[in-house]
Length: 291
Image (cartoon, rainbow, N blue to C red; front, side, top):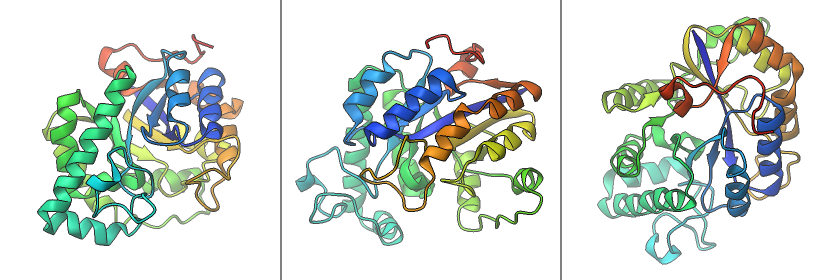
């Protein structure tokens, strides 16, 4: 059985993102969204999610390149003078490993973000981290320990099979994920030992910001049996706080709305849903019920 979770990351980042998430869920193939709980559009995202009960929402932990939930004074080693998280991920990761006080600050902020999500009243479908920062073993351990107190039962380990990408675009040569894949495989094994659900394969890494309709349709047609996740960054337009240079946000929204993509899912007998749906064996239907 081919099961596919189609996730929009950065839900709450801006009205443009929230508009895209709602449109892609009501009229397209989007089944899941990962919520930033301290972003400018968080309140709007939560309000919209409550009108879409079949949209599965999880926590998108932001620990780099974003706004904290905790008071800035409580995170002196994690934030800049402007009150936003640092962007030097490697150096910050080293500090998290070697400096206990930095780990304590991370723990406090992770707890604050899980608590903020719980306060929305939305069921927690999953949790992952912005920029895949939970690939860091220290962050992963904290997310596991803290998240379980809030009902964490599913997450993401970004292991993307290059053979599928090559089948979708035979002329393309996406490079191996030498830096991320070894850590992602360790993370997947760690999560599964802890009873956390993780997809067998994840798509969105090599073509991040450029998940076109032909690419998404091709991935759907070449899915192997089991559980897969495909994540995108849809928005009606770019230019918002935190937007990545060069990302085709509107193009990714178009892919989610594409009849080509929907037909590919039908042709390949792909069942769409979220982690919660597949745990309860009640997948999201191809046609939106809450449109």
